[in-house]
Length: 156
Image (cartoon, rainbow, N blue to C red; front, side):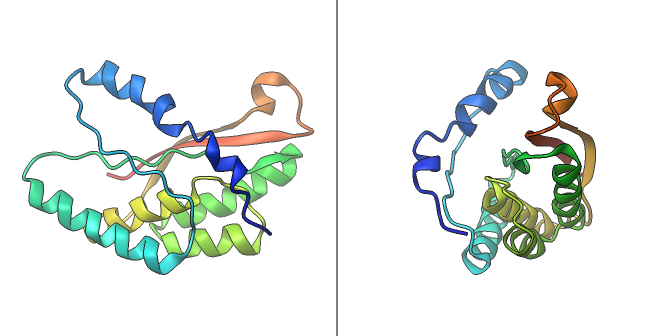
């Protein structure tokens, strides 16, 4: 699998998430990070650094990673791949998430930000993540030939 730099040139996760944050909290302050690599060691280090920064703020901080799941495969294939990625997410195991995405060809584009947030949450004392909803595009469009998966995950 080769890195597709062009796929990240028009990254839009922040502009998709920001209106929801502003609706819930008009005074929201954000520090956006766009991550275009997926090596575990730098992800682990950044997660630990974020955890230290969050701990030092003395105020509530929301760590949020935005990503869809597997892309453009038949629904049955994507559902299996998405389940494998979400198993690692539930376990707060960012290293396993990155390894599975590479080994099992799961095209989750925000896997590095997700792994970083998982590591930061773990370093802050979290022990699990909960998948609160899972869908794929075929459920809406009726076209199950090439779907994209989506999940909502909360780390209590």
